[in-house]
Image (cartoon, rainbow, N blue to C red; front, side, top):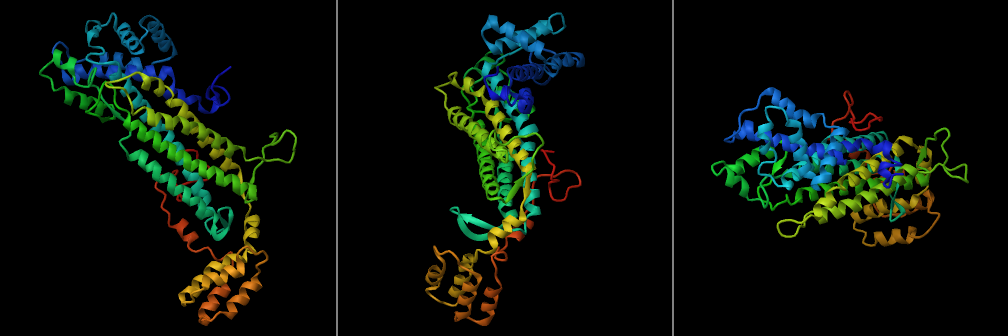
Length: 471
């Protein structure tokens, strides 16, 4: 009965993401921010009218978000039925928990000086940071490690390249795989090292108006900066009522680029499978087609491709929309931010499908070798390059006449052409010794020289163990 596949068909694969992106999770993060701000005012700022909190009181306060559960979430929703304001409901929820305690008389300091967006922006920032560090980055690391492992294993396996879908200078399978590793690691590095989550807590329009009215001698800019840093976030000093979400746009654009690289990989793998370069392990009882019993379809790479498309549509909209808010604020960002979990959920689904597809793939070396061995027209490139070295001005044209658009270019045709060339014998010998399988340049060396940046499993020298899922 679920409307979204994330909560229906795919729930078993992504339901754990509710710890970050569900309504209840948002409530928990809001409670965390409200409680820690309250503690900060008492124990760090030491505002007049407060006192240092006892360890038992700190435990009472932090238990509210550390043990926040479905029952608590339902209570917040019940309060919201009256307030019709989700953040105010959190404030009242916390006040309820302090009734009968020594802190009851201090409940006026809950949400002190705050506008709702002070709580919301920090909650979403903590939510996104936790997801990126605990789930997305490890998941991408797993994808990278799997591709790297396969790339290392096939670094010297010659393979026909296909530029424009046509036969092109040979490469190795491992070299084509390591390209994706390098691209994904670059984006992962950008994401992990960037100032990707910022926060503010500066009042209704970002000027500390109410703060200063109540406590004019407090350095509220310093208090605000220290508190944001205490949450593990980067401080944004200049905002309107809302943190402007530029940092979120950075994240979403980076994830979108990573998704596009995964999509590029999915499509290449799909094509290699269609060429027979990879076989696919079959599972007992699994059916590929309802009418064609022989089918083993590359459904995991196709599933990944579809999920990337949905994720990137959302990410693109969010990265462009969230940076724009009328004057000092409008509410349109609130609606959009509630869909962050959708975009990330479909991204995670895509990565899991890619990993599953990879786990089924087996390299068909004979098919790859057979596809390359008789492509003697590929020798046109090295031959004309050596001819150019010896100042033969029409080298390209001669090889074009010999090979372009002509089938049946054989070893004999190529060898005969080489024999007639007016070049040194040493160069003739080099050209005569070349075969399509040997003409792979530095492909294998490029793979071997690649230094994997992400940490592999304990004891793993290559950076991947062949059975990695994001360790």
